[in-house]
Length: 151
Image (cartoon, rainbow, N blue to C red):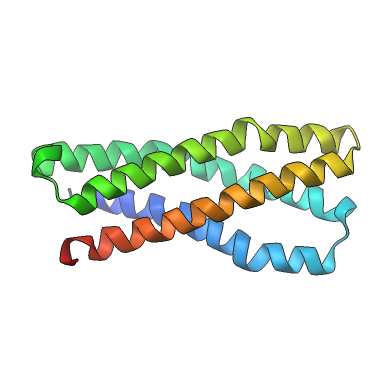
């Protein structure tokens, strides 16, 4: 628990915090200051730097979470409802990220490389919507993790 819990928390903070920053701070400023020819590569390169951290998080979070469930709580049957909810929401978040990475993110990069800015804008919009959903799920998961056993 001494190692698993801090790693679990750091991975969640990096992933959810990164989404919060991108969605609530970077997105509005980029939309205001930059035209699509500059904005689209900005997002592609930003994701290129952020997504490796997300990959690390989606490895660390289930590994440490499941380790704590089975080694500390004695399995799912001994875990509270908030643990079940965290596991469910985390799984949905991971699946949404995998979709973003393998579908619209790859299409965004291909459209930018091919100079097709309208298509790149469509793919960026898809990524934005899914990240917005994942951000909400991540915030709910964080509240569940910290306060769930008291609810």
